[in-house]
Length: 188
Image (cartoon, rainbow, N blue to C red; front, side, top):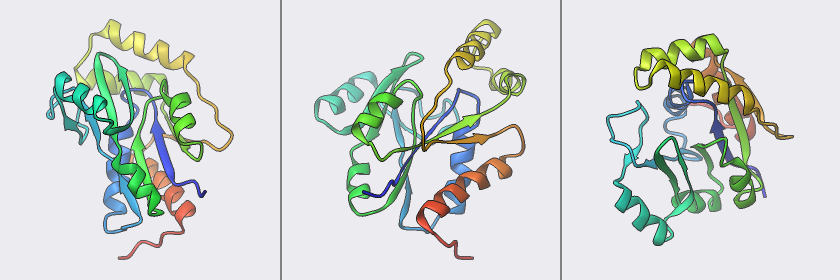
């Protein structure tokens, strides 16, 4: 089976959402590339991510109904990727998801063809971004940065994407990874 599931991970504040939004905009109109929404037990206005907000009860009902292809808990929220990705993958569509580094081993069991893409950012830049976001205390931010130092992923076919520069630079790297895999030619 061709590897068509891009699983984007990185620490909070690394720019995953921004990079994926950039790539999504660049690849808009390409039917063979789809970006999956995450279902999160967090208000729709929080976090800057284009996600589908669910209450904890709604989330649990979807788990019980088998409506998530993948789901996990992190930082006090629950996250899920809908089973619609299985239909997309079955049609040969490349799917891009915003994943979890901690869930990656389970995701690989479910989708051995998964291609991890790790967003990396220098600790000082990460700290600045998290401070600007204003959702956490400085102690929480330091804990996140220390956690990131200990959580290094390696996968033989995984890609590392540096996001110390501009959004366009990092976004274009993700677009190029997807295009190289898919041999997608963007239409002007």
